Length: 138
Image 1 (tube, one colour):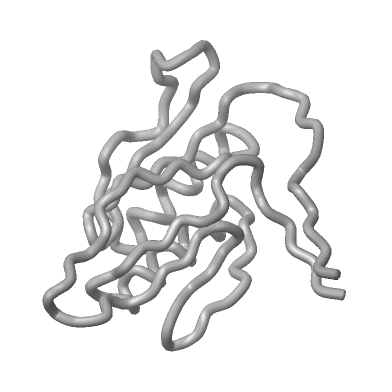
Image 2 (image 1 turned 180 degrees about the vertical axis):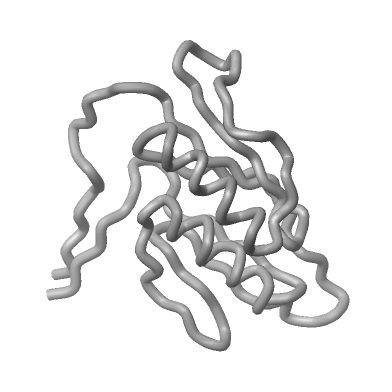
């Protein structure tokens, strides 16, 4: 019986990339730094949990421009995310550090190859009711 582990709010995010190879290199690096496994990665797309990335369908389309925020386990993961993203071709959009959104909000921001604002955030110590939601197909 197939089984999926997904997050708590977002069903999926679908990005369209101008340069799929560069975009995949960036996301492999930043998601790896956050210990997030890539579920599928072939010539046509990359998938990790609720995130799906593929190439533009035709030249008249434009790349996606969104803000994505990935959860990090701790401040060190946020720092690894930032370093890995810069090394993989991302551009700095906010170095790791505490933000004024709420006490304990520690984040870093990068621009991916298509200009999406990608964040890793650690909200501080917290107890979660579950690591993920488990869905089992019938």
